[in-house]
Image 1 (cartoon, rainbow, N blue to C red):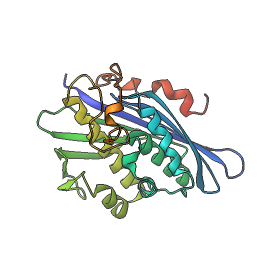
Image 2 (cartoon, one colour):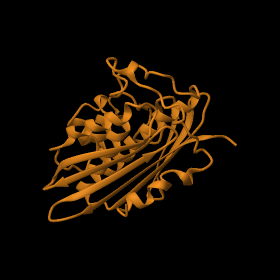
Image 3 (cartoon, rainbow, N blue to C red):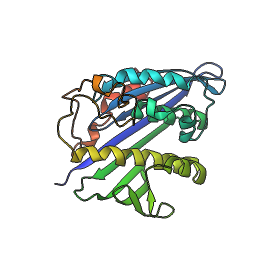
Image 4 (spheres, rainbow, N blue to C red):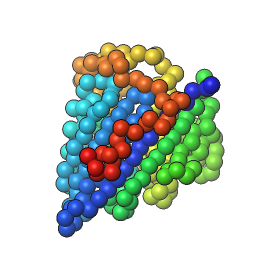
Length: 248
């Protein structure tokens, strides 16, 4: 049976005392398992914390500490608002993304949200990337490499440089959020076509905090971090059920 990259993101929020609230978010896929907590009060972020339960490199957990740069950010219903507060290239990409989702959910009063995505393995880069939100299909892209072939309004649009600004300016909160979530999944899915073992030392691409050229060689690989959820999607975030419900 043909394999596929699968990823699950879950977000939950709750109010505590007065205007104080808490948002939790978790992401899990073949390579990552992170949790993020965002506390907020009076309409702005007041603290963050993270857990790196499974990551490609030892430095990924330290990268999560950089989410403190979101402290003071006004709550915004658009996920892309966090990208204007700090440079995402100097964050852990995945912890930053789910923190941005947590902030957006808090701003919009969303109590529970779940994203499930599946991107089938492809040798030639042509895939149908699908996203569900809270159990319903919300987005499906026919793709050739990093170009979305269809549907409208994404036709012939690259998911590379400029995509975040375009969705933030042209699409609704729900639509732009879904597009950014699926875009990240498509990028990460390419890892299934690469080597099975994680090389020692991150690539010096500058795409995230660990991959910055001043520290990429310091990153020590976690050799057993890679898993394959292709045929067992039900296991993704199953260990987080109590945590995301604020029961742990």
